[in-house]
Length: 138
Length: 216
Image (tube, rainbow over all chains, first blue to last red; front, side, top):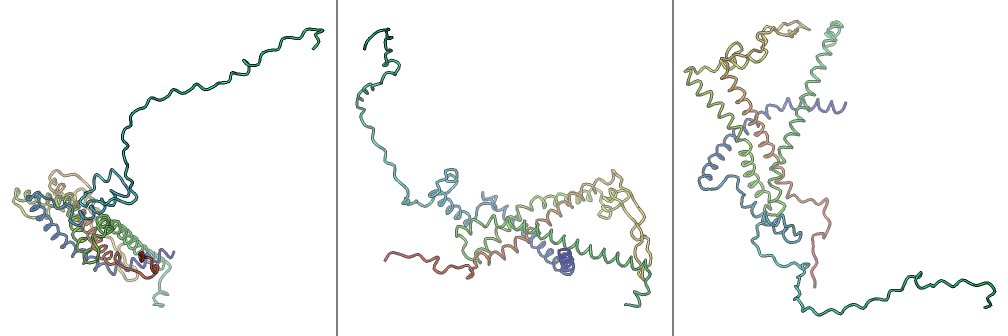
């Protein structure tokens, strides 16, 4: 109910302020038409100079450069590093470790491994005792 | 006031209550309509956030005045980009009407809204609003019924210029007004954010948090 009352109050407010809203809309319509014509003329001129009105602004380029630098080094993301524009030589980061490639060594003849002693299975070692005869004295 | 209310019959009181409820509902509806427009405008204003985020987060734009300058430029570009097609629609429709009027050598535009043969209104129900039946309630002359029907929807081949011009022009203009609404919402957003982004608050500050000690 409070929500409805609130909307009712806002409804009255909107009705009272509607002339001002209309005034803002009319002013922005005039401004928008002027802006569109200005941009259209600018776009035509830029088109014949080989550029576009939607090209990156210098600030965008600088932001991309900074973002590219950030993305390139610590995060090491190759898919974004391709897009990044590198203009500043990056100093090596402390954490980065240089990988030293080892030179190939001459191959030495490796000794043949001695055959390991393999104990025979128990059923082979344990010989069956001869059957005892009746009346035999130990 | 009280003697007037006493004089009212039971039926009159019911009608009075009904009118009050209708007025209440109309204002509530306007309130919700305002809420809807507000939400749409907030959504439209986010385009500016998208285009300004990187230049602010990387520190390229570092003060409110510079922010406003860049944001106004980007706002203009966005508006131009969004409204090219709507302008084209309006331009094409107006050019079509102009050449049609040239061909028939008659510059009277009233035929566009004719409901009998040549206008777009042939496609709609047309009511005779001036002859709406009225009745007197509490001394007020109020509408008491639906107005008589003048024309039912029917297709007329002679009205084809209206069928081409009016929809194209209407769509173009509505689209253009939506873009202008977006322009307004982005402009207000950039004016607000140009101050808010660079505002510093002591409410959340931690003493010495940004101070880095160096080796002696």
